[in-house]
Image (cartoon, rainbow, N blue to C red; front, top):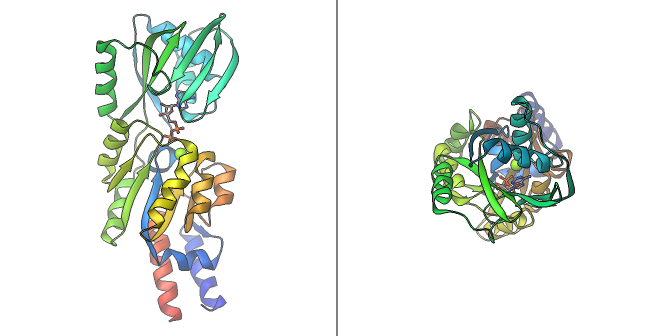
Length: 287
Ligand code: ADP
Ligand code: MG
């Protein structure tokens, strides 16, 4: 590859909102067989909103959740705190806050243990059949459910919705049309992941993945060919590094942007398709 051709390739792409940090990455793009996407903030807009609150005392469910989530930077936490502030619901100060990566948060509220997170985090808690059924229905509607526990009991749940980006389905269709396999990796529940995967037409969904497991999934796919990983979060940095081509969202965290070789400035997943087309053109010309 001549340096001049690479410059042309990367210059043209920058105009299209695709920042390519080095020519090597552009070359690798030509050999990619699988494109793996993170869900939250990559396939979805990453702006989740609370849609449902279930419990005998919904105000208490929200107040307890907000007490804990105030100390968390997770998008789900932001959604819960926004909802509570919009409703002008007062909530107590939490103490001994702990973040449990990929699962949820715990703290003491009014000297009682409180917990907010996935059903995996609250696996030891008793959940009524009625609440479990409600949870399943919400998840099948592509809503993420977090359970709220206080003093050893589940007091309710909060459903949160994050919708796919406008061009996500188109980008995935274009990648599939070019013969690539598309995969979504997420820490979210299987039912929610499946519902969102269906909305965007992705080939394969892998759910319930803990943050430190993402890179291992990338390595597993590398057994069958080159892999591009597309992500935005702190959690995604190892997967972006391990992948043959790391593609970071421009809206992503600094560490994700540093870890990727390609950055999608406009956060538009069609940028992945553009990168493929630019790589093809650039390297065909060199040959
Ligand atoms: P994703 O891959 O979608 O970014 P994470 O790995 O961050 O998901 O989290 C996985 C799951 O853990 C979430 O769907 C949620 O159920 C739970 N969880 C993580 N952090 C929090 C939090 N701060 N509050 C409530 N639940 C959380
Ligand atoms: Mg993300």
